[in-house]
Image (tube, rainbow, N blue to C red; front, side):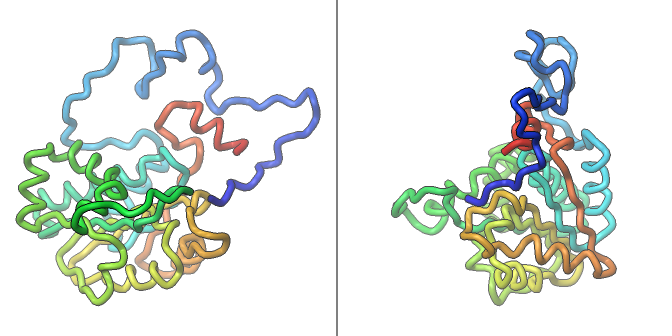
Amino acid sequence: MAKRSSKGIAAADDSTVHPLFPGMNAPAAFGWDPLGGTEDRRDQSYLRKVKPQNPNQKLLMDAIKTHNLVVALGPAGTGKTYIAISSAVEALESGSVDRIVLSRPAIEAGESIGYLPGDMHEKMAPFLRPLYDALTDRLGSKRLRTMMADGTIEIAPVGFMRGRTLNNAFVVIDEAQNCTYSQIKMLLTRLGWHSTMVLTGDPDQTDLLDNLSGLADIARRLEAVEGIAVARLTEKDIVRHPLVASMLTVL
């Protein structure tokens, strides 16, 4: 897996790595909560509307509402996939689209898990688990199973997308950094009438061999195209534990 480039950390013996969130190493930080403070653990009840946690997340959500093609780049934990899937569910429930199509490359993260038993859906299940989790969080497991059974929600591997035209659909391509340039080009050209497509990924965490990932190059080229939005999130937009953001500044 490609390593994140160095950010110019000083090499002196007395150098100090400053956390992005000062005070997080205090005793109270062991009970860190996304909402901050020392209140009791927050209720995990269903939220009908997802709200942005920082300005860049708001820019991403606004871009999805106003563009038919959005490329969301950023490190792990910035909410790219969750925001994309939440936007897809909202579009489906409002009647803006007739179906949701989710796709993800079947690439192991640095290790081979060997042959998997079962049919195509069972073989793909481990790779698509993050998408199932986000959908379950937004729809509930029973409703999700119903929608997948009738084809309203479809989860497919990248290799099965060629030759399709996706009309009246909200399409999410997750982990796009594990797609080659040719694969992303093929996926982009699946976009049909009255459809929205969102590509998410972190170019610095590809599981492909060096120089094979096409996400960064595609994003750079598409920035010049009118009607396409490229949203770039940073370590400061991470909504997981603050240590994740601090680690990514030195890894």
